[in-house]
Image 1: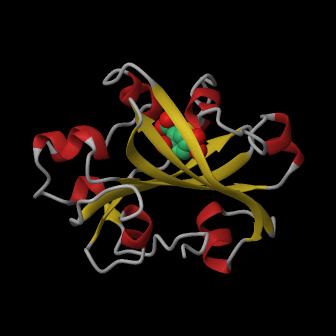
Image 2 (image 1 turned 45 degrees about the horizontal axis):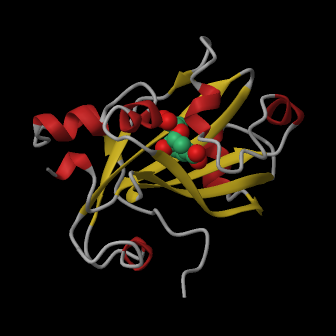
Length: 181
Ligand SMILES: C=C(O[C@@H]1C=C(C(=O)O)C=C[C@H]1O)C(=O)O
């Protein structure tokens, strides 16, 4: 039984500080633009499967990461699928505020977050952090529901800024993701 939000606690490090990344790992993990758009280039049919989308209280650590005083945020957990194959598990923390509401970020449904935020030229993101999730990490319980393969997985996260709002997005590349090819 999966408990949401799934833990993505890890040893997060700046991606540019990890010298052992292969070319393809750098290409996917450090992609500065939309991951949705990048995945769409690699498949015929791209879909979003919403696993969980509910309001939670932000932890102090999350409030620090987001530099925000909001106490509530929408926790959005989705799978990004290419041609019906799960490629990415994404977890976003979207502070509940009028500004976020105006940006239509609090009720996305199966519309990819990236399709909304990357339309804005003033979108900014912090330097991407990267982490590995070993075979014993709790996230593997979720992964095992969508893949027969268990392996160490790569993840990335960053904080986006848009119209005075900041939100945290973490993505974990599932076993069939292109970056493992
Ligand atoms: C931030 C992006 O949006 C993607 C889609 C998400 C969603 O729909 O919840 C979450 C994270 C990303 O994988 C992106 O495309 O880079």
